[in-house]
Length: 117
Image (spheres, rainbow, N blue to C red):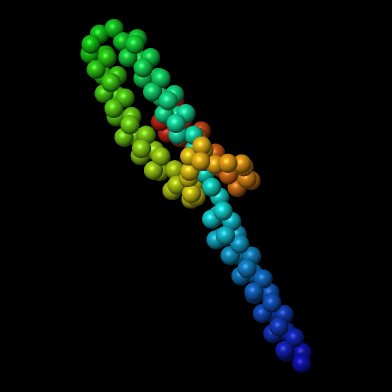
């Protein structure tokens, strides 16, 4: 009888540890959603390039600023693609989210840092 009670107690403890580990390692990280205001970052960087083009005095400076802006488009897409791997979460645009949750993670400052804004 005593051995059976010990087996039940050990089994219950192992099941509780397994459930807690699943909750911490699998379920909770899956519930985190990253949001990013991509349009805001893109428009801010676009404004920055427009100011550089407007302030350029020579045709060479203007062409260089336009070439930098064209390179930015590919680097912006690459920066957006890296966000899910860095936060290990689903990343959606901020405009697609209605309401707020404690598991929402704002990645807009990280994107701004990536595009040097």
